[in-house]
Length: 268
Image 1 (spheres, rainbow, N blue to C red):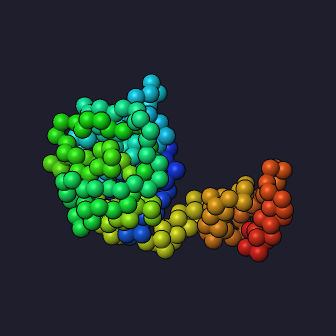
Image 2: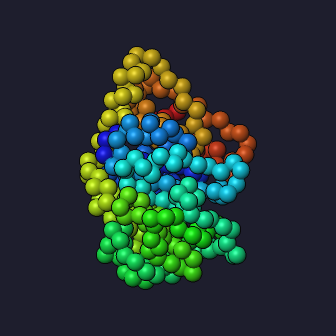
Image 3: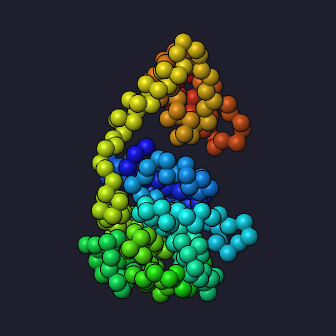
């Protein structure tokens, strides 16, 4: 990886969607565990880092944290939801349990524009999903938007931007523009990634690794194992044997339907 976007996974249900939004810009993105060592993250030479949302609380004893030095590495950072709370928590701000939280649509009002909100309407609808909230911004940060609570804050000198809402979902009206501002304008990431190129590289890597050996793959009927099966089959053909196990926990007739689909695809 070089000049792509790293997404640190804190358990958000939207992680894959963040990655997809970035790839739609033809920019490479990679989702990795939140506790990946900073040295390993920086070795990938990312253009930017996104701290995803997550169900944890930064005030919990077992809170998911990152190395504080991440914010001094000179790489632009975007904190989303939990990522915003984490940024505030680690850099000296204050995060508290909200009185009622925010779930669903909320009106965002920009109170101080910055590079993240360039070209974004002063008021728009965003998608919230949080209970904890940032009560005080860290030193050096300015509050840039509100929704009844602090909805965004930034330290532009260090290129650290945070939002309490989810810009990656379609319910956030200006979310796509915000992500473009971060990825393309703030991070200046290169548009050098396309799905077709990824498929070709992956197939070639599988073919080289397997050689003349044979592969057995367990299929669940889900997206992950099915995509893996298609890529491996494309690379090595009949050297692949797929096994589907009906555990008895599937929906009515789902096992039969899965088998029919795989047979049509010549995977079993």
